Length: 356
Image 1 (cartoon, helix red, strand yellow):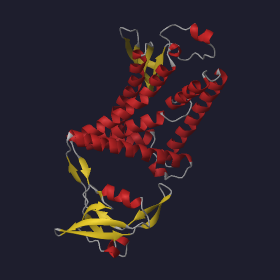
Image 2: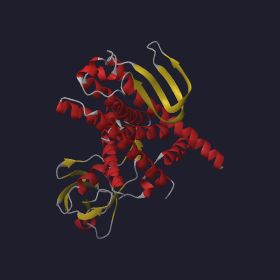
Image 3: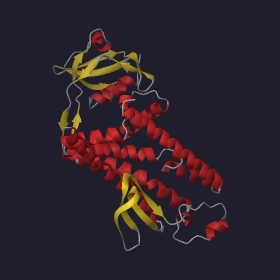
Image 4: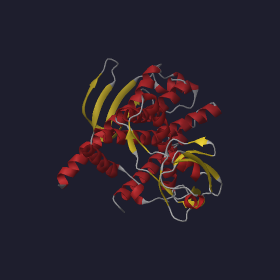
């Protein structure tokens, strides 16, 4: 049983992660060749090469031994330049010979490719399989809470709140949470009659966001899987991508402050377990997991931390402002700091993963 579960997790991990890494690195690769920069190596994984080939541009495409990530090596990208004479000595197709705008595009294209992939996967999933949608019909009302005290009943259908039309329960929740202790006018449909009911949400401290939010004491009807048109799927995909992004930023902030439940932190081990479970649950579960991980991968790489794509973007911002690159010694120092920070973060997440 253990061996079967481990094998499924192992296979699921690579089935899910490898395409995401490929898309990320292909984003860098495509932007580089379009900018006239030679790509010397395109690797999935790190360490010794397992298998590979050279294409007609003499780029080495390969799979490497350690399958955690990948990289694209461009010509001359590791050379540090601080004066024009050094820069002028570089060959035309070198990375650092490219314009500042081209380098910015090359570096940012990897994370953006992951974000775009996440959006496309979510859109495709909603169009082909459907999206779970909650109606605006109230399922139950909690005793002695604002909704009951105001006169809202089970099976009331909420049409609008303060004149703003609502299409699902999530929109009701969002409006109420943003208006604690503020009188809200609910227009509801009850037995073919339209009623106007004023409700004042109580304030509730949300530990996840560390702020007071509104609550009225109602629950939603069970969600229904509904196929969407391509346009509706795209709109929902954009909205859910935005929501996943904001949730990720809130979670990362909580992680840095250690104000987070360890059970909510998922590292490589947790991803492997979830991947195996998704593989067992079917194709659409795998697609949804890939979409979430692709968005997360893009956001992680956009963090302004040296050694990540966001760190290089920060260096290019400095170069744009001060009209010269940051001195080589400082760049190397920042890269070392970035690697140390990422290693510490990886160990912390792995420790949470293992239950420590």
